[in-house]
Image (cartoon, rainbow, N blue to C red):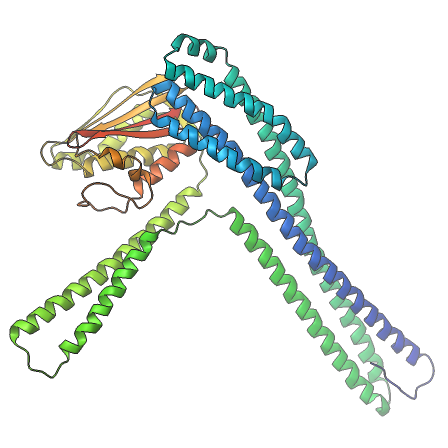
Length: 490
């Protein structure tokens, strides 16, 4: 934009200098904002990458822990069901390692740590295979000697120490990258704010000079005001882009750290019912509003069919509402931070038994609690675990006899084994795994529930470093066996 004015003296050079300065500021601000916007995008990508690496390392560590937990459970109990956890941990470990190598391929230090960790992992796997083979072959003396040597424990501790080093390195890197991302956003804001302020000052100075000029400067004033408006528009556009990119970055970070919500096909079933019975009602409306005379029996039949369809629709909607509320509840529980504290199990379970005493009295039942040890764990999680198990024992009782629930325990090294037994209706062996799956129930569906309780129980037990399994006989009763560390650390 150029302005030609018949002026003499220093006013024209001053105004021209202001315009040049404004142009330079605008170009500088635009280029700087563009560079900072690109840096913001890059910062978002590297933060997301670091979070992905951190997640892969945690999964890598979790797979090792799960395999060792399955090995430990089998060695302690001889129950082959624990071998499933061991094999699952091994498979998951083999799956995640190539992905972890790909993710840290740009970090030579982490690659070196991972390669140094491999001999220890191989040694630990060989030790677990050997001890499992000894247990299966009945070579108890050799197995005891091998365990007393603490070779596997020392190897596992060294592995966990090195993995912890990798996690700490990634967390430090994540903190640095987040700080860089924040600095980039702040700098982008400062550049736009300072540039806008400078441009505003320059514009005001130009307007002040123009107002002192003659009538011939009126056209130039209009042009300057238009230029100012254009600059303000550009500034607002840049600020909006900054706000959008900052919001996108925060949303991406929140999404990465947020617990993944469970979406089950069970949510579709009520919708199918609603659609089906809605179609049936549409088909019935032709008969309902037909002008053909109908007998009382036909009208009564139509009324029954409509009431039945409406009942199914309401039932399906209510079921969907319960499932959604259950998913939200489980998600909130999954995000809770666990805190270890001393817990007197006998005192805790005795207090819980008093809470259900009135329900037991109504069905003539009783609960027996043997001597239980003190452990260090998360109190709320323990309450939820045993509350679910005791509630299920009462809910799925047998109608042929009074309810009998017993809780006992035994200590095995650094672990405590807790059994919750009842004389209820029992569980078919083919449903042992199904009952721990989300929204899955077994046996007769004559009791209220959404199939989320035992899934939540197993998730909490695993978060506490333990395992849970079920043994049952139809018509006789069920026993849930929980193995937990005496001292759990987060």
